[in-house]
Amino acid sequence: MVRDTKDIQFRELKDTISQLNTTIAAQTQLIVSLQETLNAAKEREAEQAKQNAVLKEQIDFLTKKLFGSSSERRTDDIEGQLNLFNEAECCQNEESSVPDIETTVKSHTRKAKTTLAEKLKGIPVEEVIIDVPAEDKICPQCGTELEPIGRETIRHEIEYIPAQVKVKKYISLHYGCPECKETDEPYIIKATTEYKPLMKHSLASPSSVAWTMYQKYANSIPLYRQEKDWKQYGIDLSRSTLANWIIYCASHYFEPMYEFFHRKLLEREFLMADETTTQVLDEPGRRPQSKSYMWLYRTGEDGEPVIILYGYSETRARDNAKTFLKGFKGYLECDGY
Image (cartoon, rainbow, N blue to C red; front, side, top):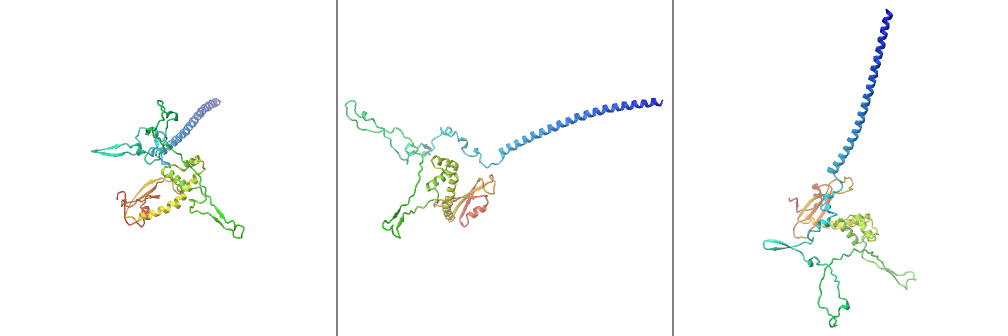
């Protein structure tokens, strides 16, 4: 009886172990499946994070491109810049750029077109004579030699003469006494000139520096393009050399003139002043996007010669005008006040 009871218990334990093994196998399979699902979820999350990072980078780039500041002016901020390459097509139907003369006729104003003589006024004229061949100057009817009876202007043409560059070589002549050259005190004289070089040990001349400044500040042609122009003339002048010309001459020749006119401006009774924003690249200690200011000071309409001076400052603070106008005792007009 006892043995039968033990056999029953043993079989029950054996069945329990079998059930537990089945349960463990199922749980193990479930754990493996869950782990695979978790790994897949982590991979999808990592991939989603990468995509989000790429999208964020694109959004940041486009936002900065659209709304961010730039150290360079956009081409659409410059009047006429968008017509840089099709300027000829845009202007072909426009009227001549020569200013028209206004003629008042009773109750309305009529613009009279400028005549050809007014357009060409002051320009040297070279006549090109078109003559009849010598063999045709004989009358075919009677054989008499023809004589001139009139002339007719056929057309006018504007001829462009390209710029020419030449080198001025200054040579000083020396003279010596032939009788005294063998003595202990030979007499020698050297020719001197009152003309001093614009810049010592430099190829710069007043005309070349003036042309460089005019091209840079009046025609807005940067130095790197002027460098190419000089090379086409056959002269290798680097942009650093041109920059040194401008800086040296501005400091040694223009600055004294500027100070002279500054003193004369402060002596006037009425002055006007205003400032406008400007941008300076590579300015020490400041970001390229920083705003700078160019101040303009002008004499009033007092019948005397007009003086206009510019002054640069990093801010628009009133102390800039106060410093510039130190010693002025007249009336100053700013923004209408």
